[in-house]
Image (cartoon, rainbow, N blue to C red; front, top):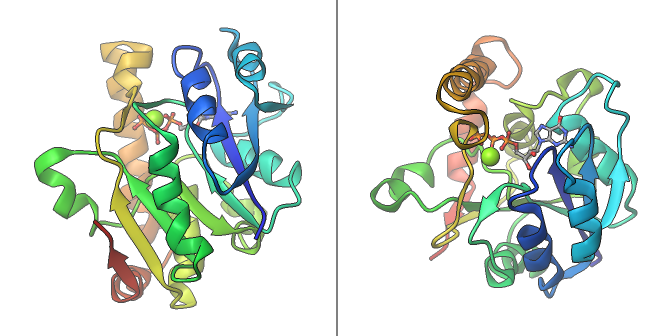
Length: 227
Ligand SMILES: Nc1nc2c(ncn2[C@@H]2O[C@H](COP(=O)(O)OP(=O)(O)OP(=O)(O)O)[C@@H](O)[C@H]2O)c(=O)[nH]1
Ligand SMILES: [Mg+2]
């Protein structure tokens, strides 16, 4: 089974090199592809220097994280893609190995790692997953219709593709891993506005008919939480 890692990254200079380094250490990964569009902080050079293959999207093309993910998938011919966000903190190769293992061993069609929220992990692990750290077969990404490629909801759409087919999922906490939040990146005001906008997009997914409510029920029935 050939696995490539795709990292969508826009202006992630403080973290991208360490994330690439962790990815290069993942024992299941063949290559690490960073998709950069519109970064103005040297993200692409840092990724290249750390050993990633860098794919550029035209920054003037409209698009989002989901389109960056698509460009990464298009740049790969692997049967499976491990997506990793470029803004993770404290991520190691061992975390990524743990995510890949159930997938590679055939126990899961999608395997997820969630950030470490301490006390709240029990709840996060049972919520509709928003995490960017996940491995899926490439056909799952290719099953997403173009009109559903949207940065704030792509994770839910992928959940929907998996859940509607009742495919097995594993999830585990990536101990010690967090990320730079929107407030870290944009400051308090703009960061809060961005976060509220993102939450609205996410909550409105079933209301807008992008994914059916019942898909969450199917998801929970097919979910195994690993420790
Ligand atoms: N290439 C590219 N990467 C993007 C784009 N939008 C987001 N990303 C990357 O996708 C990853 C996740 O995006 P974030 O903005 O952190 O989204 P999030 O983690 O869901 O949201 P927060 O919880 O607010 O951090 C990061 O590595 C971003 O740099 C984009 O338009 N193009
Ligand atoms: Mg983030």
